[in-house]
Image (cartoon, rainbow, N blue to C red; front, top):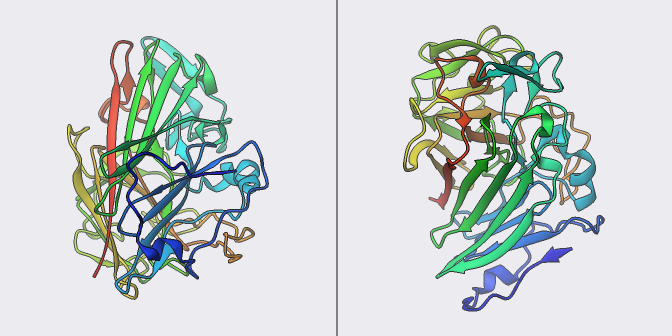
Length: 371
C-alpha cells in the first residue's frame, strides 16, 4: 500500500514530478502488511520508504539535464523486501548493532552478553534476527516549512537479539529543499547497552549499471583494520599505499580488484574508513562521489566516526529491481555511516555504549547535485 498524504501547506510541484521517468518505476504492492510512503520537494527530488525496516526504496534525483533516476538499489515489490531483504539489506535500517561483533559476544559491566551468530561464529548486524530491517516501524508524517518529513519509531524489547535494555529508536527522514536527504537517529534505553545504527542504502549515481567508473573521495587517512572475515584486529591502519586510499578522488573500480591484503573475501570494498576520532556534535562532510556520465554528485556529511563502504560483492545476481533489471555485485555501493564494528570488544575504539537517562543522537546528510 502506497501512502502519499496531502499535507497542509504542500506547494504545487513542478510538472517534471508528474511525468514518469524511464529510469524510475513504482514498487509493486504484493504484501498488504507493508506500506510505502513518499517524500517530495519542489525541485524534483523524491524519496520513498517502507514502514518495514524503515527501508528506503527509492531516491529519485535529476541529472545535469534534469532527467530523474532512482539512485539506490532495491527490489521490485513489497513482498520481496519482506521475504528477502535480510540477505542484502537494501535501504534498510540496521540494528541493534551494525557491523560485526567477534564471536557473537561482548562484555559490559562485568557480564558477558551472547548473541546468536550468523556469520560463522560471529554476529553481523546484531546476529540472527529478526533485526531492525524486518520490524514494522510506526510512521508519523509532518512538515517543517518547505521540508517534507517523517519520523519512524520502533521499540526493541529487553533481550532482543541478546542485547540488554528496552531500546526506543526514532529515525527521522527529512527531504530538504536543496535536494538533500537528512537522517536523524535518536535512541534511549532502560539498561546499559551497546548500539550501532546505520542505513544500508546502496548508491549508484548513474541510476543503473556498474559503479566502477564513478569517482569517489573520502576524508580519511586510516581504516579499521580487519582480518579475512572482516573482524577488526584492533589496529587503526593507514590507508597510504593501499587500495583504500581515496584521499584524492579516483574511480571506484580503479583498484578494486587488487589481490591480497587489505582486499579479502570475494573481493571488492567492504571496509570502514575512519573519518573522525569520535562522535561529533554536528555533521561534517566526509565523502564525495560523482558519476561523470550523468553529472550527478553526492556529498555525505555525518556525526559518526566511520564510514563502512560495501560494493555488494556477495550479491548473487538472482534478484531484479523495479525495472526488471538484475541486481549484481558492484551495481551499487553501500555508504554506512556508523560507529566502529566490534567496538564493545576493543577499549581503544570510540565507545558505542548507551546508558539509561542518556539519549543517543546521530545525523547523516546525503546531499545530491549535478554538474
